[in-house]
Length: 238
Ligand SMILES: C[S@@+](CC[C@H](N)C(=O)[O-])C[C@H]1O[C@@H](n2cnc3c(N)ncnc32)[C@H](O)[C@@H]1O
Image (cartoon, rainbow, N blue to C red; front, side, top):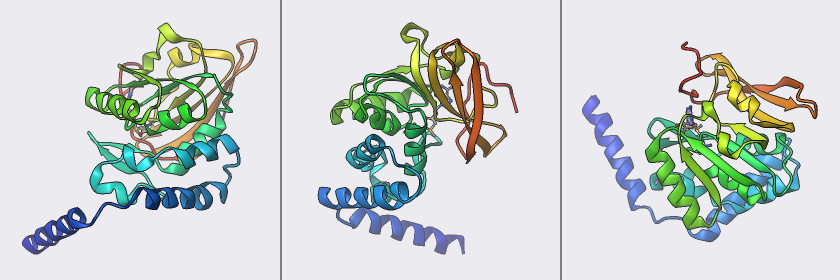
């Protein structure tokens, strides 16, 4: 039985490798459909978010064997046990922080670099921290090749990026058990942070945190989500 399953897997892999890669115009068409059906048809209405999602070549951010799935309505593995988020979640988080062109934005969890590219395409000055050096190096090379100006640093995102603070917006793309205090400190008065927060694996709420002009912090939950965990120093153990 096991042998038959293995033979089936090898055959499927061989077929996937033998198929010709889709042409650039096919990817562009798939991207337009993604924007129309997965984003605009739901609640993504910010024209700058829609334009950025239509422009950034998501297939460049996934492993070659998964490029045919790049514009589907789900997350995909990117290696090292990590994922590139579902397109809708990337758009939702980008919209929720209400960016203006030129805003300084901190992303925690560079991963493939896709969320960072979308923010850069919206005109933000993007700083991104990744804890896995291999992912950071790959994302940095990819973003450079594709022409997105994003500053990337390897480190524990729980500490933020104090040398570049304060930030108008912070997006955390891994699930925290509690909001890292250093990130709150590095948020500018008037700024917004979006972060998945939860007490158990795969059961988090996407929380929008606002810092008022006087520094008062308020937060509210926007929806239930599933993210890989934010690891590192300040996070309490499960
Ligand atoms: C869901 S993936 C991020 C997807 C990414 N934003 C993208 O567009 O591909 C979460 C990422 O957070 C990273 N991560 C987890 N804990 C971290 C920490 N303490 N500091 C920085 N990055 C962290 C993981 O290594 C992983 O790459």
